[in-house]
Picture 1 (cartoon, protein in one colour):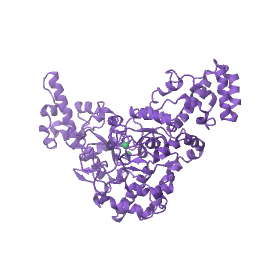
Picture 2 (cartoon, each protein chain N blue to C red):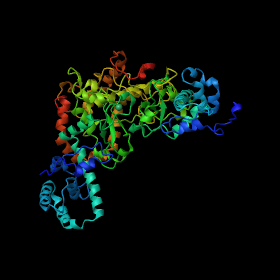
Picture 3 (spheres, rainbow over the protein chains, first blue to last red):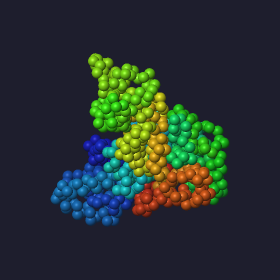
Picture 4 (cartoon, each protein chain N blue to C red):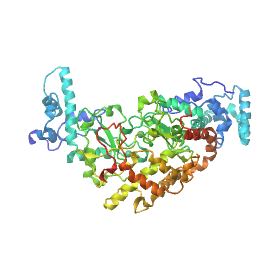
Length: 339
Length: 287
Ligand SMILES: [Zn+2]
Ligand SMILES: [Zn+2]
């Protein structure tokens, strides 16, 4: 079925090599040709059939046989697929330039929506991890994230809402890509799920290492590493916490939080000295989000968030200072200094 | 001062400084007043910091008339740029300097915060050290109170000491009305609409931290500066719902997405949820 996989001149290849499309993975034709993966997209894209042909480099004029086969495939996926392809078969020789540009933009939209699904599939996320290791997505602009590699994400799964952003696994925040050429790329083509799914799928990435190091040290993280909620403890926001929080100073003196212009946002870059504390908060998370594992401790864990959180909050100051490796020479304390 | 005949710097032809601040890559610098540069008091100690100090100063103040070869000229030029930077660090914390930098801040000459939730809030240049040749310039966002690397390599190579560690903080002490409203809005990583456990727990912990801060400030009767009023006046005692309130806001932004994309999500779930669940339950086992 798959015609020519990996031909440099394919529509997919040329789309992915366009300026500004550096974040895209090359969706495999196998993925696209599995109708199940396209479920629901017919209604979201104008001239769906033509767009799909364009993406797959199916030449409507030349190979009617291929086209027919495709039509049959289409029929399996959606009952209403009949009229479109047949009618288009009659019309195709009259297709004018304006049609082509409509189809071209439909093809881009369709490819983007398929791409959103593809990068959350096993082969897709694998391909994205290769791009990640090659640094195709750039790095977090935050100074204290020390050039941690970022991941392209959308803030919405619906096209046309917002442009692509960069998710930093080190500070768990999202940023506008530095180059304006990415500000025309739809965020929905990457979607809301990919960034977090990437972290869950590749827990062996050592995120506490920065930029150039991380690829070389893939999978070298200590095996005895603690795990919390499916993530390595050291991979939970390594760019946050003590030593990674900017503390404003004037002539060497910290600006007090009691000042009108004093620090108000340090919580955003803070984390517990001992990330094990976050396990306690987990019961609350389970209750309000999903409950997908069978850890017996969560059975008894309903509805005690307040006291637990209290303990977590007040206990943090007494804990040992295990955090190390601050890139800033200054002793940047957290917001707790005034307590 | 009158010797130099400069009531205001605009009347004076500041050839070198004009050239310097309009050079590509020097957008972060403001123009230092002639009066400031020619008052020796302001330059105290810099003569030991800068090679060819007097020639460099002459160049910066457009009275340079040494006949020398190109290498020497280049060395003096380099010193002049260094001298300008060092004086700049002192100048930007004067009343005039603050006002000039404020103008540039309002025009976003220093760029905008890359953090999505900061909505392109303008940045300010700052140094992580006041000692020259230690750390390159960084950019401070007063909205998220964090620091970022300049996008352009030209800017990233500028010495942070030319702006110093205090300037941006002094600016907001001098102009407290300019302190931007702070927002609790933040990004929450999700997989198929569900929050990721570890990240969600951290988010909740950070919310408790913020609530603690707001309670402390309330006790001290200090304005918290948050734009989004938190419902509960007593801070964290009852705002356990707060994280979820925020989560609902997040969902509301993309609520349509969640509904319309149900089919899509189900499709994707078939492809990847198993992998995700497996990864969550047995990290390391997924290749
Ligand atoms: Zn980051
Ligand atoms: Zn910001």
